[in-house]
Length: 219
Length: 299
Image (cartoon, rainbow over all chains, first blue to last red; front, side, top):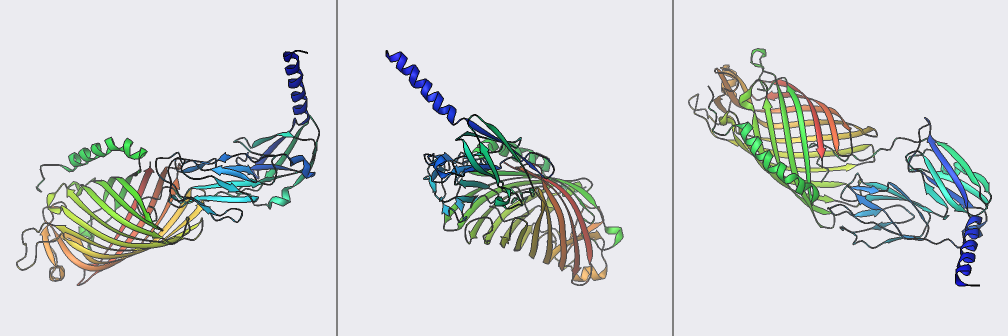
């Protein structure tokens, strides 16, 4: 058996192994008026914890561009280290008071700030102490199977091992409790399961970025 | 005819704006912050006159360009250094059209992190206004103390006290024994502001305004009462050949109510109404209402 044949067999085995984890979950999220909801985090928590036993926590990043956090909502797996590259030409001072992770990155420019470890699941609200209107969210997921909806309100969770899942959704503006939206779902190999939610989303109130000459609060 | 200086307001505005506009691309990229505002305002009593026959209303078109830089200087403190240019064009009272160039420095203290931390700010500014009718040209000095706190995403409260001094050139005495320095004035000002977010991009704001100090009232030849209470009198041909400006002292109570709408993350349009009732020592009470539409852009 020559090396070429061995390589072909290896690739075939890898493809076969991948096929066993090829299940997908397509999620659609709409609001109370039927409009698509962007920036919703969809999570699939395997009922059998072994399904996520080998998942790793990759490094991730939340950028600051044009004095905004980008993306507005970032989902990461618990244990991930997240960097906060500042792509503006001014300095930012990123902080969070949220119980899952309280931290402060003193004023910095560029990529000087050390990555932050998110080791507890939950919602972490980000802010900048200089630019009060800057708000962002990091959703620290207890499961490695998650995705964030796009502008069309759609998200696809890839490579789900076959099995039973508790699937739920979270959005910064949703009025329902997260646990009240849990759905139980079974996916088989090669499945392309679908799930959808209709959320009651309240309008997001933000600190005004431009406040005119009258407001001396900023700078 | 009123005397007009060799450099017209329009020329001054154009020159200074051209210089600043050339710097905007650098400023927008760098550590500087740049903002611009355009406004249209209607003032129903520009001359602060009491009697109906003396009241003149006018519409004023304005533009402001401001540049500032923020220097964080330690635990919770920041220093802001800024400059601004403002131009106003009066539709009828063209002699009042003016250009103002100013600079400011402010020290801000924030107690804690985040948007909801209470803050206080001390600011000093100096500016020079150049009018089409030069006799109104003035240097303006202003010191202010402000403090506030955003309660939550909806409610924002702040208060400001300021002392303002305008120094203008003294004019020839019109009445023997009474100063001709009618356009110099000083005042103490206090304002309390409440801002409320109605919806995602819509904000209401109301303010109570108190002012005590000098004000200039322009009218035709005055009564014994106003002559007796005026601290200075000068001709004011911007309003008419027979008009005089009287520097009086009084107390103003006013309010402001407005609505702002963020059209984009960088821009804001606003509409507000202001009403002022002034009681002068020795008479000459007057009222004034102002309606203003503004468009702001922050780079």
